Image 1 (tube, rainbow, N blue to C red):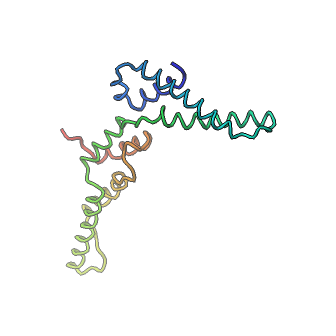
Image 2 (image 1 turned 180 degrees about the horizontal axis):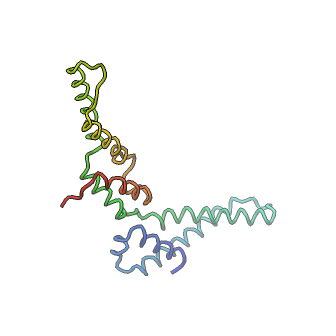
Image 3 (image 1 turned 45 degrees about the vertical axis):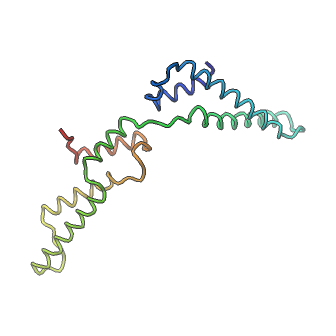
Length: 180
């Protein structure tokens, strides 16, 4: 197996372990994939090399040939070697489980609005010009405001890096009690 096959095998085993496990003959699969990658890189490099001017000084020609080789490798590797879709990590699954058992961002926003409306109505009944939160309402509001950014997502958990997932999971543990 060539180094492209080894790169692919390492990538698959790390980022798509269940797909890797389904391969009947990983050695053969990655040997063929590596050979295919090498062949495509050679073809692409040869094609791009033909576009080089013939009168380049030697050092510039060497630099251009290296750049062409790198460009061909990058293109083929992203297409063949690194094209397998990464599977969600255990952290992503844990985070998704937590999100499924905690209130959604929309529910939290609705609850915050409800707390404010209740405080406003109470203030009007009591003749105050400003809403006054009870200790219980204030504690609930503070808890919800702290939780809101942790459950608000700008991308899927599977797309988050391990550091972000770990930080969110640790912060959410304060609010989450696993279902028994």
